[in-house]
Length: 439
Image (cartoon, rainbow, N blue to C red):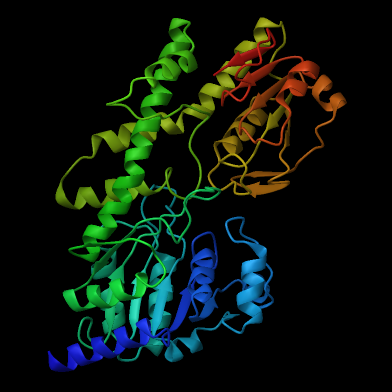
C-alpha cells in the first residue's frame, strides 16, 4: 500500500504542477475539444489518432471541429503545447492517457467495442508504472473493469497498484454555445479508491465541477442513463405526434401549451427521428447489458422502436401531402432541407434525414437535399451532394421537407417559392401558409 500511495502521490503532484504529459486518443468531437482545454491551462498534450489526416491537421493547428475555436488550437500548437501522431509509441512517455474513441453498435444493435479493445491493447504494450488511463467513450456498465482492466493487466502491472484506471464519460453537446468541456459537470469513477483520487486531481485541473462516484461501473451507468432519459422522452413526444396525426390535432400546439406548466414537465419535441453519436445508440448498450442479468428494459426497447419508425412516418405523411395535391410520390421531386442530425451542426452521423432520403428513393421519388453545414454525405447507402437553394429549385420541387431546422435558411422564402412544404421540426413557426403541413 505504501508503494501505491507513493506512486499516487507522485502522479497527483505532477498533475497539479502541470508537469504531467497528457495523451488523448481519438481526435473527434470529444477528443479534440478536451485536448485544447488541457493545453490551454499549460499541459503538454499529445493527440493520437489512426487517421493520418486528423493527426496532421492538429499538428499544423488546423481545426475541423465546430466546438473548437480556430485561434485557440493555433495558439496552443504555436506555443509547443500540442503535438499529434498516429503512433502509440508515445504512450510510454505520457503520464495520463484519455481514450475518446467511437463505441458504435453492430447491425444487431449489440455493442461494438473493437475500437476500445484495440486502443487498450496498444496502450498495454507501452504501459508503465504511475500512469492514469481514463476511458471517456460511452459504453455499458462494466466495460472499464471487465474489458479494459484485464487487457492492461496483461502487461504485468496491476490496476490501483502500479497504474490507475478510471472512467469519466464525455458530456459533449455539439453546437451548444452555453456548455463546453470546461463548464459541464464531469462525472468520474475509479477502478479503486486510489485511482479515483488520481483521476479527480486530473479532471479538476480544467473542469469547473467534478462529480465523484463510487466506481467506474457507476460512472458508465450514469452516462447511459442520461442518454436513455432523453431517448425515452423524445420517443414519448414522437408517439404523441403519431397520435395527434390520427386525431387531427397539432402536436406542436399541444406541446407548447403543456410546457407552460411551471413544474413537473420538461420540454421534449418530436421530429423525423433521432440522430448523432449518443441518443440512437447508447440506450442499447444498457439494454444489451441488462440481458446478462435476465432483466428486460422495456422502456428502452419501446423508445428505440418508436424513434426508429419516425422516418417511415415522415415518408408516409409526405405521400399523403402529395396525394392531396393529386400527385404520386413515385416520380415526384422531393427536396430535403437539412441532412445534419442537429440544427447548425456539420454532423450527419445517424441522422434521420439519411433514412428519410433512402426511403423516398425506394418509393420512386427524385430526391435531393440542401445543407450548407453538410454539403456532402456518404453514409448508410446515401451518397449525395447538396444543391443550391435557388428560387427555381424550390419552385421545381413538388414537395420540400424540412428535416433539420438550420437557422441560416430563410423559411419565409422557402414557403413563398415552394409548392408544398412538410415541416418536421416546426421551423416555420409563426409563418402561416396553406402550403405548410406540420409533422
